Image (tube, rainbow, N blue to C red; front, side, top):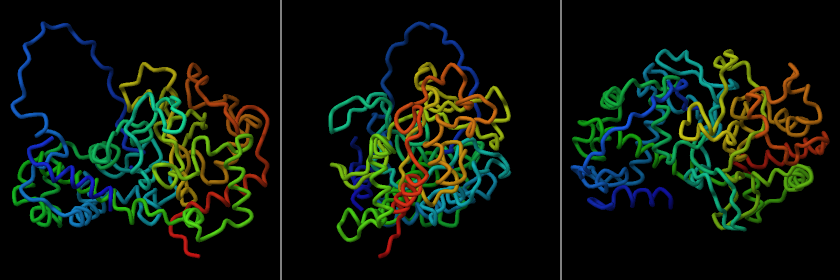
Amino acid sequence: MRLALTVLAIALGCRGAQRESHEQPPPAPVPIPVAVAPRAHVAPRTPAASRAFYTDTFAKRPSVAEMTALGELAFRDPSLSGSGKLACTSCHDPERAFSPPNAAAVQRGGPTGAAAGVRAAPSLRYLQTIPRFTEHYHDGDDGADQGPTGGLTWDGRAQSTHDQANLPLFSPLEMANGSRDELAARLRRASYADRMRAAFGDDVLARTDSALKALVLVLEVYQQDPVQFYPYSSKYDAVLRGSAKLAPQEARGFAVFNDPAKGNCASCHPSTVSGTGFPAFTDFGYVALGVPRNRDIPANRDAAYFDLGLCGPYRTDLAARAEYCGMFRTPSLRNVALRRRFMHNGAFTSLHQALEFYATRDSEPARWYPRGERFDDLPARYRENVTTEVPFGGKRRLSDADLADLEAFLGTLTDGYHP
């Protein structure tokens, strides 16, 4: 409960003090700004501290346990969506480590529940140590600049869990609330509305701002519940604790995973205990893998449309950074064996197929790009951004036996292990 208690201390203890989806349709071009005469600075009517998200502005201070319970109710509530059919659990199933409940490449939502998303929904587990997005990240080991790192969603544009929660609530492809007032009205009609009032104060839902602040706060606290969102209960965690041992095939897979001349997986998915605790199996960085175009995604039927990750179209502040185009955040590999779609666009339908891509992308390109155009989900001018680090880069380095061993090891990262 340590992280949840930390949020509560910040959110409630300082009164007066300081579905990877979640995408919108491509934005319209930004108008060229027109120069205007400078205006005299006018002090805001309220101090910045009182407008900060975590400043306590509620009449009551709910307990962490109550906010967690309310957050779970909201997380499971389809009535908060425009269609009345889509809840957070529709794309993030607790029974599958908060990843999609089905084998669809992208999930459907929107006002009628028929709109197709554009990215595979990620797992929501083990997000608690992801740093805020920065273009220059220096880790604690050697101080080297890792480059773009951190942030939530595939392109890192959400800087906190409550920022992230706002994206699907208003995305026209997901929960599709047309406005903040519309969502607040839905919250007032929710079955747990009176419980929200009892927790935060009788007037918490009266105003849109306070209603939505309470909503995303309880969603954030819920997603910090260690039992559900970072249990560290896999077989590999038991190995780290000294209460279990890897089977021979799992141990061979672990060796391949860490070998910089073979799998080299640990270069992006560190596997060792660090100063921040047990490994998250991600370095939180960004990489362009050259994943094949997934023509099952409706948006990809437009030959001129490309999802470029860090440089757009859904993230707009880095649109001019051509060197970032095609890069997506490296996800955690914890519970990866529970997924049925892989990569940002859900191009692969099994973990084994995803591993085969790493082994043979460059040695057997026709297998992945049958139309003869390598890295076909990127415009030609950005294809030089695609990584060639091991295990990529020409010759095949991973045998079929290596892949089977890797898959066995990755299975040890599934939570809920019982000897």
